[in-house]
Length: 188
View 1 (spheres, one colour):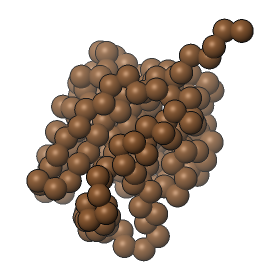
View 2 (cartoon, one colour):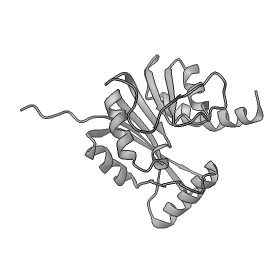
View 3 (cartoon, rainbow, N blue to C red):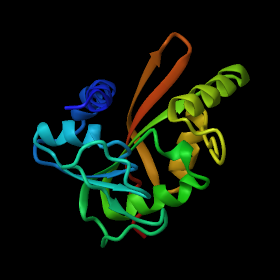
């Protein structure tokens, strides 16, 4: 195993630990924006059936080969997955609402982890740190939102927050995991 692979796995360990409590053993999970593949690898090792998906293959692991798509319509029929997860992905997309709609369509439930902010200073520190961490200084849309901003987007797209877990890291950055389910349509 290369040093880079070890580093990727180390970074993914805390995410895998935090996310795994939401999933039943053997759950069928779509991971939109699988990146280096370390999180997929760890979740598979926990017994989950995880399908990696991304707009390009950046996997650090030969056994993790993401399906590639154009960032638009997901190539599955409705309700093909128990969960669709997007882990620190939405703020990298110019229109997160479209991806949320597609996730809602193909998944029974949705799990989102996002970096959030509470004030202007934290917002721009988050933007800078994310650009630095991802070595992505041009073309990064920084569609980060506040907690309330994400909750409004979810509700506008027919999703409700079943559970939200908040985490602070490095003393100044905030992250949240949202477990979402579909809002029941009123019976007429």
